[in-house]
Amino acid sequence: MESERSTLYWVVFYSVIAVAVIFFLFPVVYLFMTSLKSRLDIYVMPPKFIFVPTLQAWIDAFTKKPLFHYFFNSIIVSLGTTVVSLVFGTLAAYALARFRIKGSKDISFFILSMRMFPPIAAAIPIFLWMSKLGLLDTRFGLICAYTVFNLPFVVWMMREFIIAIPEELEEAAMVDGLTRMQAFRRILLPLLRPSLVAVAIFCIIFSWSEFLFAFLLTQTEAKTMPVVICEFITWREVTWEQVSAAGSALIFPVLAFSFFVQKYLVRGLSFGAVKE
Amino acid sequence: MNAVTEGKYLPWALLSPALIIILLIGVFPLFYNLFLSMHFWTLTRPELGMRFIWFKNYTTLFMSSLFWAAFLKTVVFAVVAVGLEMCLGFALALLFNREFKGKSIFFPIILIPMITTPIVVGLIWRYMFNGEFGFVSWILQLIGVSEYTLLSNPITALPAIIFVDVWHWTPFVFLLSLARLAALPKSPFEAAKIDGASTWQTFKWVTFPMMKSVLLIALLLRTMDVFKLFDEIFIMTQGGPGDATELISLEIYRQTFRYFNMGKGAALAIVMLIVIIIISRIYLRVFQKQESVT
Image 1 (cartoon, each protein chain N blue to C red):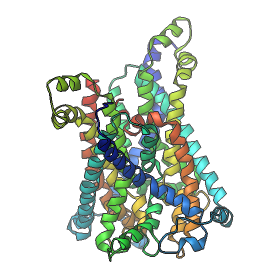
Image 2: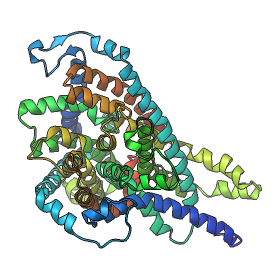
Image 3: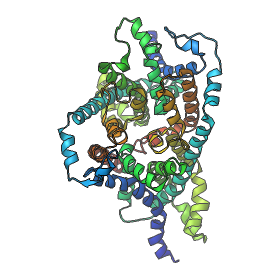
Image 4: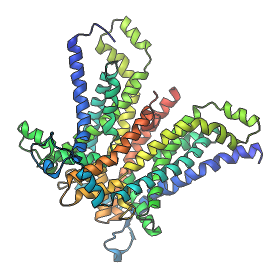
């Protein structure tokens, strides 16, 4: 920017940036490193940074426990929740964005405020009911619970995205003889596709990472990855290299997915409160 | 169906599935909590059944030192952790708010903690803090600190968890601040430059006032999140040692799912909910004000 900045300025500047980058990056890298260590390289002080990498921990983690089964659960639950929230959420968002309904703004903010409630406060009744309905330890039960927390997000985000698209396009199509829902399906939805993908990815990330409900509402069959990782660690003898492998496996998809929604991150995480 | 009735009923038809789900699985449980909180109900003593006891759960709650300790810890946690996150995140954003080589690489790297699954964050730091082979313990030993097993010491456990929270969520404040900084209008800065304002003066009178609303939003979102915080603490200390890291959310968990004291847990949840509702009201007001501006 300014060429008169001295060399000292840039040295200090880059040192601060370097410290910040290392501080935020190192722990995650360290986890991954640990997953490539052998047992002997882990339980030593000082920690080893040069070692012969091995995939043994990954193989053990995935063969000694049915991790694939839990991975599959995580995928089913994430996708199921995402589809349900996206379908119902987009329809509701369309109604809120395009119709003049009495109190539509209040409804929007009511829906948004649902997102802010602490899950633990709803956990007790949900737990009690699900045990009565026999939904405990089922993937369906988990999908129901997650949908409540994803729906507000979808409605709010999609409402914003729909408002940003000029209404005239649909109106023109309706003049040409399409019904409202046909206009929605043929004109609006294709335009919304990138937004839908972004919102879907957020839903997948949220559900993939969720722990509390998964922990309370499942026992054996429907357990998801975060619960299994937690169990790994509360055993008496913690097998750190395997836990690290499972943990790395859990966050890889999240990091990869986040990469694709980078430019929506600000909006997604502040519910559109912060405009870029 | 003609256009008039369509305009009347269609929006509600579209809204109803979402609203029904939210009411049924979202709002209804909160009210059911209210009902539960006025009952005596312990699952370990089923023969005693469920008795209506008015506000007795609340009075015992407010009389118990355990509750106030948990509440105080949550408040301290919120003030210290969120305070640090705000300062560090905003400072880092100011630093990043210029062109420099490598920005496009460093920026996503700093966001990594925020995206990392909470349970894995807890896992990473429990490992790093481990007294026998943890990285942090090693560093502490190197610089000569004798109390290096942070998580198993009641005095250092809470600060250690605050540290983890700062690591986890500073990037969030950073991200929001930077996004807003980049979107600020240019003209006020040019005017300040022409008037000969110093860097500090520009910051104090131009940048900061324009950043206030976004900082407030970040502050409120983070504060609400502290009340929700569960996963990281659960995996690192489970509220221990003793109850050194027992925040309200963990206390609810302990009352309901370990002591099976449904009424008491529900009462706690309601108290927490009231706090959250107050904060979220403020948040929504700020938010709506912003909406009307833009």
